[in-house]
Length: 338
Image (cartoon, rainbow, N blue to C red):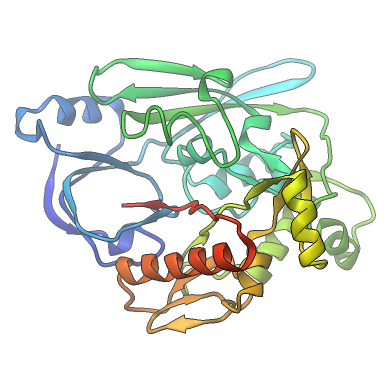
C-alpha cells in the first residue's frame, strides 16, 4: 500500500486543472481499499473516490485522502433466452466496456458510446444520451461503505435514479466506493434512433440494415463532431443539466421565445435544451482568458490551457445568472464541483 503526498491532479481530471491532493493512493482490489481506510494515519481526513476525473471540477486543492479506483475485470455472470447479465469493475473504461458488449452482440448500451469516464461513475450520474439512461439496463452494484467497512449491494430501485441523479450524489454522497456494476443487457436489441440526429447520421453513413454497431458508430460520429476531445481541450463534457419546467411555464416561454427547444417529459413537464438557452444569451464561443464556452456546443465549458478551476467556476456562474435573467430558468451544474 503506497500513499503518496502532495500529488498533482492535472493528469487525473479531464479539465486539466492543476490542483493537488494532500494524500493520494490508487487501489486495484477491495483489500487495498479496506487496508488504507482502517489505517490510523488517515483517520479523520476527508476522503474522496476518484474515477476517470471526467465529471469533476477542482476549484481548490483537496486537503485529504484521494483514492483512485482502478478495479478492473469483466465477467459474464449468467444468461437466459432474453437477457445477459454482465459485471464490470468500477475502474473499467466506460467506452471500452460498451465496445466489449457490442463486439458480443449484447444490446442496450450502444447509445451511450464515447461517453468519457469509468464504469463506476455510470450509476452515480445515471449517465444518459440519445434517449437511453443507465437505469434502463442497470441490474445491481456492489459498493464498499467507507465508514462502516461493509460490502453493500444496491438494486436498481435502491439507487433511486433520476435525471443525472442517484442516491450516491445526494443521500449517500461521499459514503461509498463503488466496486463493480452489473448490467442486464438484451439478446434481441430494441433500437432507439429517434433522439437527436441519429437517424440522419445513419442515412449519411449509408446504413441499410440497422444494428447496435451501426447505432454506436452514429453516436460516436455525432459526439465527435460536436464535443471537444479532452485530450486536446480540457473539458468535462456537458457542464449543465437540461432544466425541466411545468407545462404552464413552458407555454409562457414558448410565447415569448417561439424558437425555444424543448422535449416532453414525465408528469406533464418539459425538458428545455440548456445549450439553446445558453446560446441565446450569447455565450457560445465566448472566452475569458483560458476559460471558455465551446464554439460548437454551448453546454460545454473548456480549459484552453492554464485556466484555474475557480475561473471556470466563475464563468459557469455568469452563464447561470444570464439564463436566469433572460428566461427565468435556473440551470444546474452537472459537474461535481470540489
